[in-house]
Every structure is written in structure tokens, then in C-alpha cells.
Image 1 (cartoon, rainbow, N blue to C red):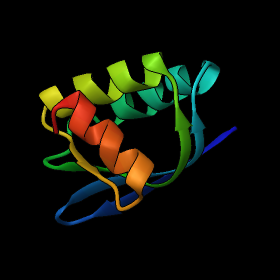
Image 2 (cartoon, rainbow, N blue to C red):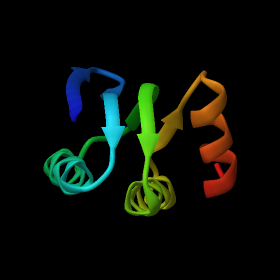
Image 3 (tube, rainbow, N blue to C red):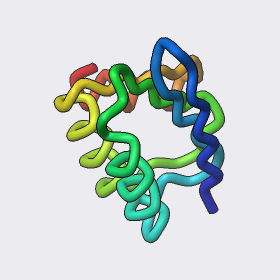
Image 4 (cartoon, helix red, strand yellow):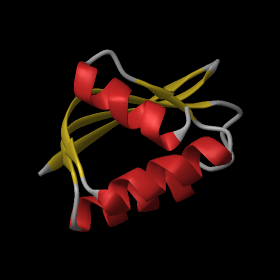
Length: 86
């Protein structure tokens, strides 16, 4: 399961993720991202993510390539961000 909390602020939009970014939840995140795609700045907060599958990594890589800032403080999520090339 994945919880996605969207916070709109003057400086941009934050997507805070909690849980597993895998399977059908990757598609759910992609849908959320598409709906806020016009935001001036998008930050994806990954601190509470417990697992990311290959499709989730690919989506995060695409989001990063298109300007989203990926933020993480945990060892696992930081390692995945390094793998993605963040």
C-alpha cells in the first residue's frame, strides 16, 4: 500500500509518499504526478517509503529527469536515489 499526500505551497507542490512504491501504486503515483505537472516546482518526499520496485525506480527517474526534486533521508531511499542518478 502507498499513501500519497499532496501539499500545495507558494514555492511548489510536495508529494509525500508512505509505504511501498510497487505494483499498482506506481501507476497511482504517475497519475498524481500528471495532474500536478504544471506546478512550478515539485518535490517528492521519500522518507517514509519502505520498498521501491523496478517500475517505481523507473518512474522516479522519469520524474527527476523532468524536473522533480527527489528527497530522502533513509539509507535505503538514499541508495536508490544514487542508483537513479539523483
